[in-house]
Image 1: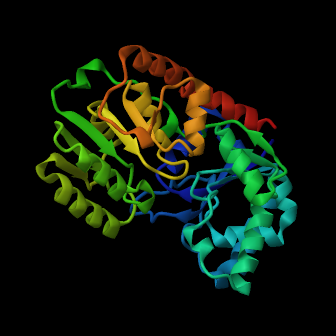
Image 2: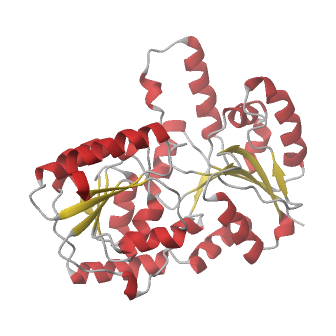
Image 3: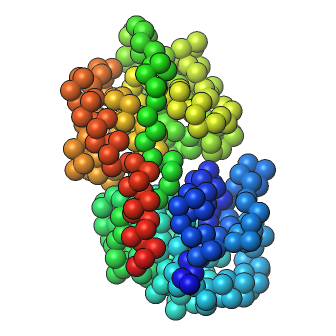
Length: 355
C-alpha cells in the first residue's frame, strides 16, 4: 500500500483538506503530521490514528534533533511527502541535512512561503547569507511543485533554481467556488466595497483607503475582514477605516463560519485586493464566481492566471466604482464554476497522488 505523508501547517485550510481526503480517498494511505501554524485553540487538530500532532512542540532550534529523529522514522517508509506551506525553519533545516527525502517530496506553495521576506533586504551578514543559501537549496530541491498559477512556479525557478516538475492543483476546499442562492443577493443604491482579506500588512489597506477617500462623494460603504492575522494591525486598520469613512466603515473583527462569510461576500459589489503577491485566492474565486467586480495589481501572478483563464479582472491602477457589465459577470461565473469545482479538485489531487 502506498504511503503519503502530509506535513501540515495548522491553518484554516488544514482540517477541511483532511476531511476531503477521508471522504474521497483511501485514508489508510495518508498520514498527516501537524507541525506548525496556529494554536489548537483556534483550529482543533483531528484526533485519529493517521494524525500525528507535533504542532508547536518542536519550533525552537534546540528541539531540532528530536524533530529530525521523528521525521526520519516517518519519511523513510513514505512513498511520497507533501508539504502544505513551507514556513517551519526547522523543517527547512531538516530537508537541508536530509536531502535524500526531497527526491520524493512535493511542496504546495501557499504564496507567503514562496515570496522573499521583506527582511531579506536588510543589511547582509554571514549568518543571514547562510540562511538564504539553505532556503534556496531546499526550496529549489523538491521533486514536485504544486500550484495552479504558472507564474508562481516560474517564480520558484527564478528565486530558487527549482528543477522539479509543476503539478496543477488549487489544493484546498477554500478555493472551490460555492454557489449562493439568489435570495442572499441584496440590491440597493449603496455600493458595498470589500477591502483586503485579513489583518496583514500585505493587504495594503491604507493605500486603498486613500484611493477610496478621493471618491468619497460617491455612495458606498467599506467592509474590511480583520479577524485573521495580527490583532494589533487589525486595531490599527479599524481605527484608520473609521477615520476615513466614519459610519460607512464596517470592520469584521470576529471569526465566522464559511457560510456566514459567503453571505457577506454575496452582498459585496466591488472587491479591492491590493496585495503585491499571490494572496486571497479563496475570496477572489468566490467573488468572481458571484459575478462581482474585483480589482487587483496587474503585476501579481494570479492576475495573469485569471486573464489566461478568460476571466475579466480589473486593474487596481485604474480603480473606479463602475461595476462589470452583465455579459462579463456571467462569463466569469461560468469560467469560475467550471474550473474551481470540487470534482476538478479531486481529479487534480488524484493525478498527484498517483505520480
